Length: 94
Image (cartoon, rainbow, N blue to C red):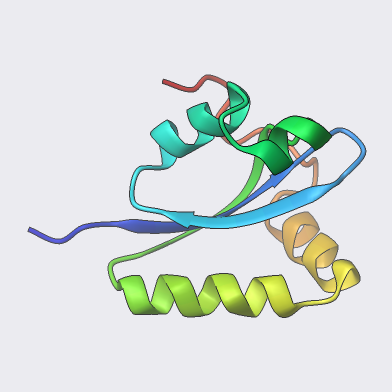
């Protein structure tokens, strides 16, 4: 059985960003929303605004690093292209 991995971006209302990778997206988003991550708690980064899915952990980690290395403008453009309204892609977490 293959495992699915997710590269994701969370945003605050003021568009502070957090990029991460996980194999359990609902659980990880819940951790961010309940303040279990220092950075996301401090800046209130709780809205899931971008997700990519893969079955290869190496590809997921490489993509996370690639996104983290992007300029802020490129990250904003990536999100805006996939999610123009910056809607929360997971309005309810576990």
